[in-house]
Image (cartoon, rainbow, N blue to C red; front, side, top):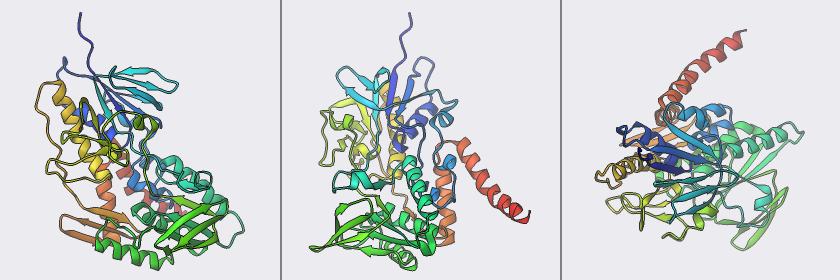
Length: 399
């Protein structure tokens, strides 16, 4: 009687989880070695998060930014389950899904990413909108369409957080709303883009100023209501009217991860070894936002898309190595630079000694992200659409 194949269970379909699954499907398994690969995510779509802003301006369509897992995994041999993880039993090597099956595993990958915490300020959970998923983008789109169809002469938007997401979102919304938009960024510290380069900060400052986007620096949030936001600037509280509040700061881990008795840092991220295995649990790997990770050189890595994509390569390889009695590789991170969109016709790119701004950076950013999309089939479909869409628009205008 033949033995059952090993099962690799991957929880989370973001960059860390999906790209690990795809990497595993490409590795040189023998027929006897080939495991069952299961990917679990509570949503039915993967989200290419760096391009989520383009949905707000109609530059891209949802199928380009958020393709379905079933389409991406077709022909890979990876099984997809849509479900929410209710609990993980590490000693018994089992995962329980809400309203779904219990999955046993031989190897487990924790890549469930994070969630936006909306419990820090009174009224945030009821009235603020996060911007992390395609569902969040749909909710914002519905709200904006309703406001744009109204007789308001102003649409006031407050964006909480002056990091990449806050700045990029502010520029896109300003380009969409144009003269009707009144947009402000509320940042707790004394400057935006704290972890970025001086070049990016200067470019962002100019882009924000050109679009009349107001910056509330050194400012905290006291409360949010259905139509106001209360700002605290050095002890002085000012309550101002607002139609939309977008919350872009903070990350909290899922309850199922928080409940695990694993070594974690103060933010709840799981501590991993250089091979991306969870401390004291060599059969469990972690990647992406969940991983408190230092690479082989002792460099602490950030929770970014490019880190998660690189980690997925190593997690996939090390899963293969651990099941085929080969040596595991320690994670070595290569910083490839930064890219940022600053509206519909502006962006920045700093990479490998190259610095670009404006339309050249817009093009380079798009091509870079096209290359980073998860499968060749999706790259081809999106690339062809990007080529043919301008032509179709011109022809339509002539008819």
